[in-house]
Amino acid sequence: MAVVTRHVDSDEEGMRLDRWFKTHFPDLSFGHLQKLLRSGQVRVDGGRVKTNTRLSASQAIRIPPLEEKAQLSAADYLDAQEHAEAGTAPGVRPPRPSSPAGAIAAPAVRRASADDKDATALKAMTLYEDRDVLVLNKPYGLAVQGGSGTYRHVDGMLEALRREDGQKPRLVHRIDKDTSGILLVAKSRLAASTLAKTFRSRSARKVYWALVPGVPRPAQGRISTYLAKDDAAEKMRVARHGDDEASHAISYYAVVDHAAQKMSWLSLKPVTGRTHQLRAHAAHIGHPIVGDPKYFDIENWPLPGGLQNRLHLLARRLVIPHPRGDRMIDVSAPLPPHMQQSWNVLGFDASHYDPIVEAPES
Image (cartoon, rainbow, N blue to C red; front, side, top):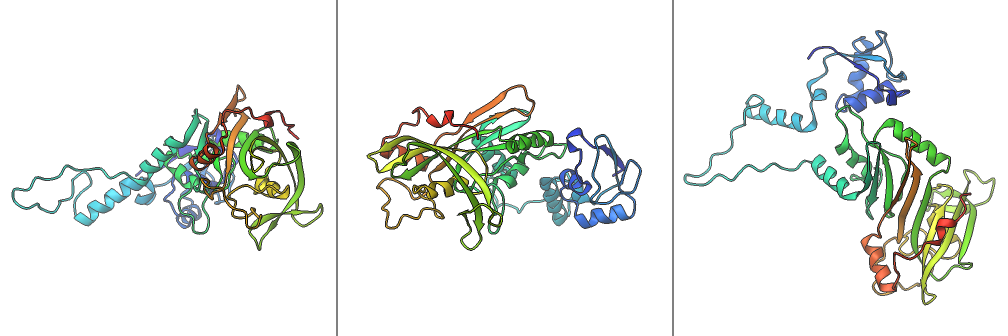
């Protein structure tokens, strides 16, 4: 393997050098990279650098011969290991155990890799895709990012879509594990940066659907509170202005339909984007979301027959300017199976006019 030179892409502007290597050479350990930097084998524009050096577009990165594992895909590396254990050279099929005389050998079957399975699953979730953006319909129970005891999540699955140039699609925002629906993913760093700014500027319009007990009064309203994290309960609590780490949270709600004054279909529009905001706000007005394990606090409330005790919250619709600025992305997600079942039981029609669309943006 010879020394090669790679140039920094325009959408990698400002990226740390160690992150650049993690993106392009995911199997190269941080410790080995440090050794290469200390010995001057890795250079940027001919000069010595450190792991935290920020890169500029078009800079030239000198890359020495790297350890073999860093040059190979996971599949190629495992294949090389198999040949090494069998004592054969790459390209030569390792010997297989002999079959009994007269037996017909079964045809070779290619075992689907984890990446294949993840790519197939992501394709099945896709609501919209172009060269810059991917919009997924995240199912109930699938985490968006990893955490303690969480091994399968969307962020990890996106590794299956890593491009040949090393770029992996990036999450633009998050929704809770038990919330179903729209999740926005950027397919390049430039798109991720642009979309993140759009979210921060509140230019993205987000609409959620929820099922709650009772019927809120008035039928349409604005919820404005301060929310702070309750570490002991692992949830958000309504706080007062000035409390430690309290953030202002604003949501709009509208009753789309109700069943005999017992259950309501709400459409919700969060103006701010606080953790658990809609779940905490629904509980705050006395109508917690059905199936919410953290915020449903009505004692001895019987779950109606035919409804599943799962969080009935759907990220229904997202309207956001495209990162290229030439059009709008407007995508809606269907009801997940458990909510569709509840809608059928209660007689709600998902094609009903949604009044939250006209709610203010602030």
